[in-house]
Image (cartoon, rainbow, N blue to C red):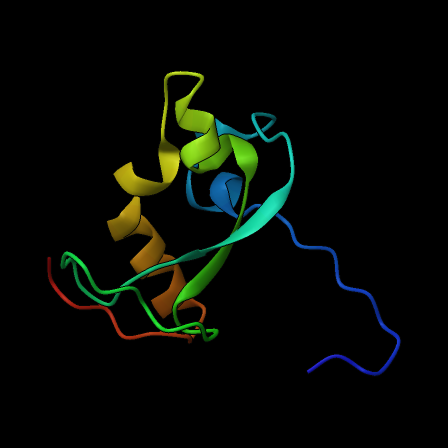
Length: 92
């Protein structure tokens, strides 16, 4: 929880999860929902255990440039959330 009046900058975690992405970030930041396990048609809940901050380059907008990082790295994002103490790791 942030103190009143404190502004927190959202930072893309793609370079933390995948070091090859250092310096590749651009655009606005957004929150991406990460499900506990892969399944179609159900969005993950909007809480700390299921959200990661990503920049425009690492979301669907980046796919227009020919690469969509977020969907190809879901297992790594689940491990990141688990190691951060936010979510359990389940086998895919």
